Length: 431
Image 1: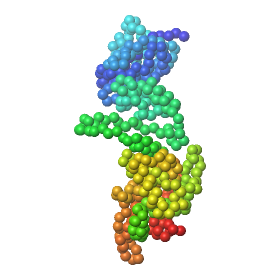
Image 2 (image 1 turned 135 degrees about the vertical axis):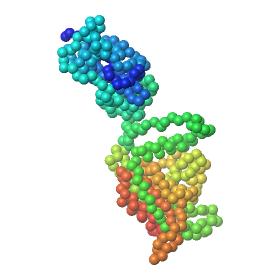
Image 3 (image 1 turned 90 degrees about the vertical axis):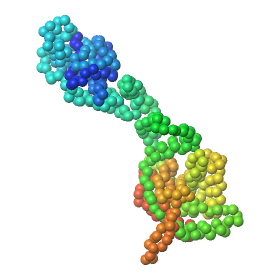
Image 4 (image 1 turned 60 degrees about the vertical axis):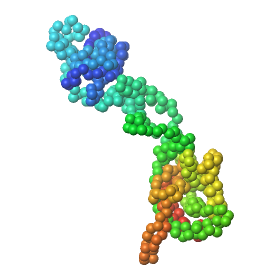
């Protein structure tokens, strides 16, 4: 098959002059097809690929990355066989060569092709080759799309931190080598921007505590892999609070202090027994629900170095006084950093009480593998319509976050309604 050497020039790119070549996409010896991108140009507003006007083998590059070119600049030479061109032979000539094509014997360009000529590639046509913002050339974006790679997650190693083909390939290889967990381990997010805060004013850098580092990773995992919904409600604890104060007077000599949390533990167990899907976990396959027959409740403790969640075991088998003693003891050890890892495992359900600090409502994050968590805010006196008139009642805000894969909204409302009723009538806790 006869071959000819043809020259490829920068086509009409509008009024742009001295446009920088930010990427050379081929090398000598490469086989290209008509339409394949050869180089990428970048102006101050956009990037554009220059495609091959016909198929062939790259013989010699006449440019390199960083060069500045204008319309008509020689890019490379192609060794072409008997292939159908994308553009006519005339379109491969520089403007001066078009005018002097009769004297083209001094160049490597053959006489005009007999094929039907197509219009030259204008700057407007370059948008068909994806004129886009900086970060990656159109050809690299197309390559990344074909591989399913998210360019937002890829760090560029090219000129001006542009993403190259090697960057995309390395990213894909890295992703394929990572394990994919059933809980959504393949989730990818863009990196946070790196900001030099000192440029805006005085700063102080303080390292995170070990607890915050560990809990932060778990909280992030739980938040992004569990479909959270939070149900808010209120419980009338006027009677409960009066009874709690009475008990504290009775047990003061024994050094026992009964907090609202002891009542919450008892009420939560009652609700878990009534609604067993809240006392459950999804198995590793995410296709089965493991229903637990024990009632171990985690209690979030605000320790100096960060939040810790010790677990009180067999809450269903204990009375208010015993729970009050255990709560005081385990909370003290948690704040003194004397809590063991074993004492923070095996929980079925978690209570996060911020009532001693304040707030009206919040969205607690489910403590996986549990499927629900109860947030409690500060109780406040409110006028409640009862018996044809308003009465001042002490209302406790409840915020129940739950895993929507396991629990639906109706079940969550039933759970908080039952819980509120149990707290409003402490006699129910004695049943």
